Image (cartoon, rainbow, N blue to C red):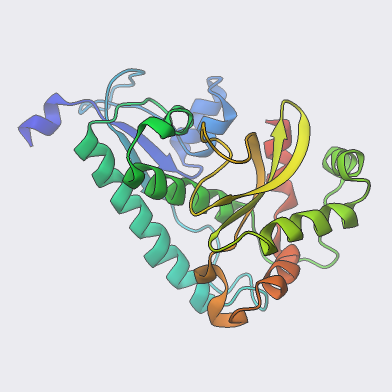
Length: 252
């Protein structure tokens, strides 16, 4: 306990906590606020330097069955309580073991090529899944983007339907496990995918940019309900996309 009291810890709370809202009000990069980047020492005082990056898991934000019939409750429960929780525990262990002291998750990913596979894989898994949970909500009829987001999608891809086709293809054709993403690259919207738990914030990622939307295409995200039919999972997933969240990322 004594050594803990002597060390400053930066807590990266994965999700929108009250602290994350406060950092947004203070002008912190919205991407960092997304993952709740705050810093404190053992006395609870704010600090912008030092410390060991730590991820924690916020409540899911909706019931496990909220996305049914498109994503079943059992899949959501296992995905959230086993897979996501596991990534968080393992990345925190790896960060402490390696003495990594970056001040934000964004900074961590910007230097990920210099770090261990344990930090890369589990840090990506921790961050990606929080982003994924916030990218979804209970199904609504005629679920689609509106306003500025729809205009941006139409301008970049020709139409919303063409955007969905290209995005679905990125997810369906990702070999093995990974993610498909919509990103903003200096204001230009792009679609692509990353392997394993990589994300577009990583300095050596196949696709780079600010994530606006992401879908998990690891089998654990859909196998209980869809078996090996990844295409069906992606097709049905559009019913639960949280377009308000995507619009916030575009404007943030």
